Image 1 (tube, rainbow, N blue to C red):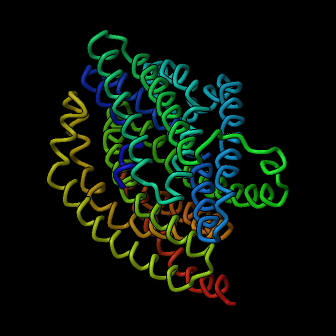
Image 2 (cartoon, helix red, strand yellow):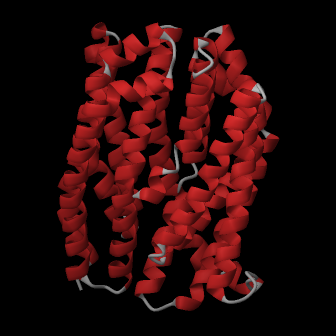
Length: 419
């Protein structure tokens, strides 16, 4: 949980530092660009999820020799995707910034941030692989160490460049690139120590046809599922942008709350991925169902705690994140939706972990697409309520994800452990 909670802090720190400058356009720009990167990198979250699931299953099956190959395959794919994103940065920027629908000032600030931070793509995606590989082996403490290092470095350099050296939005982007590079170097050093030798893998093992085919099939379905999830949040952000700079900035501040609660609760999903993946690899139904039950029960308890924290500290945190009075008022008005969100989202996160651990990727993909359609239908029905209706539709989306996965879980469990 703590390791995951640090993941969105690069965007949170950038938003907070720029927010202290008091310019809504700059705050909206860094928020827009941060959402783009969150979603762009998130699209390839299968690098973490797939690596974690396959690592845990290999551990449960006693196939320890597969672990270095799993890391190597993930790093190769991450490097190729990252290089592709850099090569396509100009058309991607043109399309994504246009879709976000911000004002000229906001879009200009976002473009500056984007043009620098895009160079962190191979580094950030490789860090996904390392994180999944470590958590898949239940080495969450080491994963936490890497994440803390990334974010401490990011915080320090962001404060130095933005608030001390007055480098503005470019300084926040430079800090993110340096932090990701340092984190990857640390992660690879840890991996080398764990395998007790160089991280080289024979080409025949790296390119094992059966392993590659299974990896690509699972990752394809996870990617489609993630694309549907991203589409919902991009739609949410775009609708906020069309409501004006103040609404966009207010939603951006509140989105940091959602990210913090999501990554916090997703720590339970990571635990489910590891525990369920290991039990699935060992073909142990009892351990699998026990892990599922524990994750859901503890998840509900933590979701209640998060809701209480947001209710008590939310107003103070909003005022810290932005110095603009109009943005503060708007964010306070919609804080109630953020307070309720963990109670609905926790079941979606918990079942996500179970489904990924068991590599039920196809079903997870289908249920996510259906949830997206329910979200869009809810927004259409509530659109007359403005930004409040948009937030209400987001809550419907959370509830649909968890509810549909809960209904599908019993038949999948029966089919997977039929023998």
